[in-house]
Length: 250
Image (cartoon, rainbow, N blue to C red; front, side):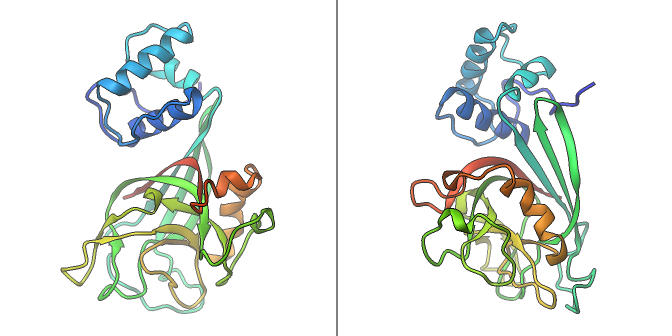
């Protein structure tokens, strides 16, 4: 039996609601605010969706409604499981200390929730005295580009490592500010946070989430192999494209 996100309804809050809002926007060309808050506006759109798909129009999103929602779209849940590590570890050649997080990737589509694998990654910046570590919670994800030097073309839709410009990546919170913790009490937010490739002997990040270099190709290829249109990655000149799902830091 297929597994689906937890049941949500009026008053629910959290990443499952954000996934629902994002999917309804794509399916029905809506403009719901994707904020993870199931209010009156979201309920009205859910009821309309249920009515048009022969479902009981009760505004409650359980397995039957979820299966209809994901009949035409898919989303990803990417979890960085970090434990209690909030300090920098010494960096040696691609060692386990440099990549302290288990990164679990799940996909939700017409078949329900399925696992796409586990990777090693990091949520740590190079310098906690200056930069910040993203706080635990959930954040929206979009396809997009890291290192935005130039205008992307379809030739950029390949796996890129090292410090190459226009690297396909996942964009957190639409580049807007996210809450961080830092050794600097005045450093409370960071913006332009992305999931991108990591490095072998340094974190190479100002607080972005990184994936171990030897595993980056397998990670980002999940998206490059499926989404080959430049508009999926770079829409309206924003270096951001298609909604992909949610990032969970825990």
